[in-house]
Each structure stands twice: as structure tokens, then as C-alpha cells.
Image (tube, rainbow over all chains, first blue to last red; front, side, top):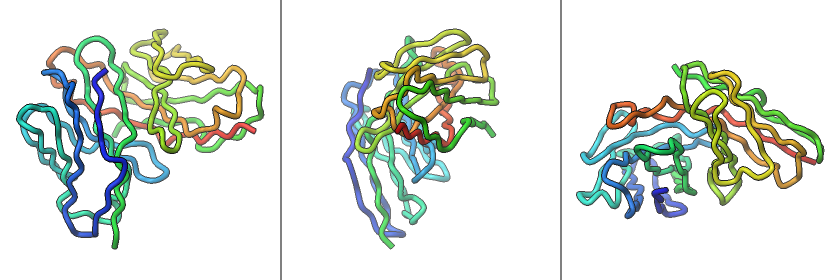
Length: 111
Length: 119
């Protein structure tokens, strides 16, 4: 299974941008990159996904490196509600449908 | 909105008891998953199912079994609960992905979790 590597934790100040990195050097050509986050005492929730091009939605932006071996989730203005564990995962095509979650990055947002 | 519900938010059982954790989704999804989550270890996949009566082992299936008799329901069974199975259990579902179709962009939907304590 393709694996991802993320920092264990990051810290940010409220209203500042946050860049959460993810390395996925063994990504295959057709794997989608998905990001989820888990707020305290809740199940994970979807944030954003992409394949090759950068993506924006109301929650965040996803910047994907040209070689696709890394990506960055961008929160443009962090709020206290963004404090969560962020997971970067790869959705494999063909074969098993299972997704592999790593340990994620715990984001702390300071007021 | 997709809803994934789990039978209990909190559960306390004794060592040796048989424990059933139920998960129901209302969006006709083919794939369903059971994870456990422990501090410092992230989410670990226990079992998943891609169709009724079909199941596959995840990364940590030992001590667990599953049942999928109906498409919308996926049960996790602890045949004889042990203290090391104290954990947060999360159920998830998403539709079947096919080739390069847009379904590969579908997201996985999680339930709220069941915090199981085995005494």
C-alpha cells in the first residue's frame, strides 16, 4: 500500500495561513490524494482531494508537487475550530478499496 | 447528507464478554470499514467489506470478526473481549470506485465513534 509521511504536530496562530505537508514518494500515477481531518471527539471528515492539479474549496487548498511525490494542505486563515488531526491518504485504483491512514498531523491553533 | 451511525457512543464491558458494535449507513455504499484509534497510533484498519457477505482483513484483525448480512449494516464482533481492546472504534463507508470514473473522488464518511472500555 502506498504510504504517506506527515509531521507529528504543527502549531499556528489564529488568522494566519497554515501549510500542512505530506510526502508520498511511492505514489502511483493514478492514485488520488485525499485529506481528512478529525476534530476532537469526532470521526474524521473529508477536507479536499486532488490528482495532479492544485485544488481549492471552501475549506482549504491543496497544492500538489509536479512530480506528485508530495502535497501541501493550505488553510488560508486558521481559526480555533481548525484545531484537529489532519490525515493525508492515497486512494489506490484497482484491487483493494481500503484506505491507509497514517498517524496524521496534530494542528494546534493559538488564539 | 450521508449518515453513518454507530450503535453506541460509549460502552463498558468485562473481560471475556462477547461484544457487538453495530454500524449502519444510509447511502447504499458498497464499502464499509472498521477502524480502531489509539493515542499515538492513528487509525488502524481492522476489517473491511466491499459487498454483502464479503469481508477482508485489514492490518489488525486478530481478536475481531465481522458480519455483513445487509448492505447497510456492518457489525464488528469481539468474541471474547480483552483489556487491550479498549479503544475508540470508528466505522466508515464509501461507494465502490471503478476505474478512472469520478467515483474515485468520492469521500469516505465516518461515524461518530464508539469508545469501548473493557474492564
